[in-house]
Length: 411
Image (cartoon, rainbow, N blue to C red; front, side, top):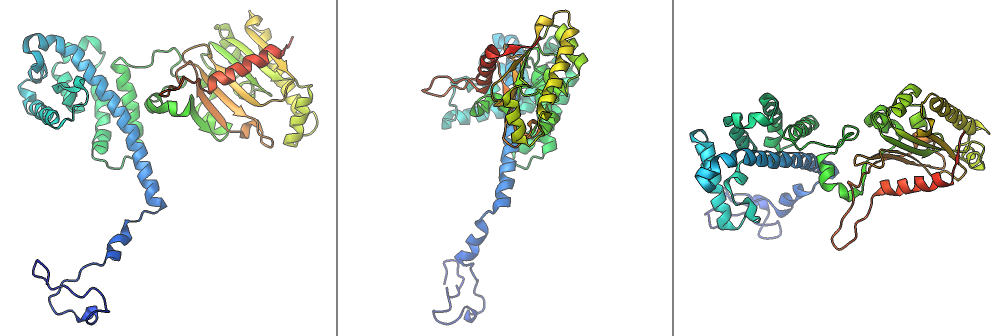
């Protein structure tokens, strides 16, 4: 007999008869094996969980950045107005009668956090830190005349915040976030951060915009921004026009530099150079033994690769001949065994970008994996107790300079 008054059936068939012999009114309890059997997760379940966590993590980082930025803007604009009169209660005063309910709730949450020791940073011991994104928005809307001198259009701010609301609700409740909503949240966050005055400040930021996740955890991968299995997939994400257009400096080394020569027109190169871009191109010497070895590796006919390289060099010479300052468009050749192709754009600036492909024995350049690198010293890795380490961009830049020094100019 159980403590609840129910008569329990026997645990197994070996004791005092079979389970079917239980008297009427007895309650059957689940066996341990029946309880534990459903707890195991298969590969599909784990994949689903990882996908959910990855999307929610990305969205959370964007939402966190927006909330912190909006909180700082609200404090910068409203604090000087209300604090001289109301002191520490300036947020309560700014909320006014319309926001009395939610601001008092924030005050209560702060008091609970104080008592339980949840305030780990003294800078968070204020009511403003306990306001949610919609509440910060409400403060901004209520006092729009105070914010109007700093922003062009109130509607742009509100539309961006509206687009974030779906993702904010999903993330806060740990529900599934689909790709479309995540992409919308990332676009809206980037636009809102730009409106609030914290956008990119480098001249060519649109070439490879810094992703919020990269900015915060990118040091895990040195300065590698993305990896593509081949050049076709690279060009879907980063077309040649986006990579080379508007460049101030372009250094390239490889066998035939097809990504530049075959995907960026001669007229565009002329306009780029005339606008002030300094170009240095390093081709392999089409008459060298290294080209013949590469032809054998790829199974090409004798002279096939060397003729292709020679045609690319002739095309670049024609481009150079049209320039008022041919000295700003240098072409040289090297005789060493080619190890990689690299395109280093604006390598001396804060917005440097590099595209690097290693050479594989049996794969053409179009089929080789591609690394996209962020230069400009942005991705310097600093670990506790260790010296700072430069990323891969500097390694390939130094390699380019070394080969350039030992190469010969093309007349």
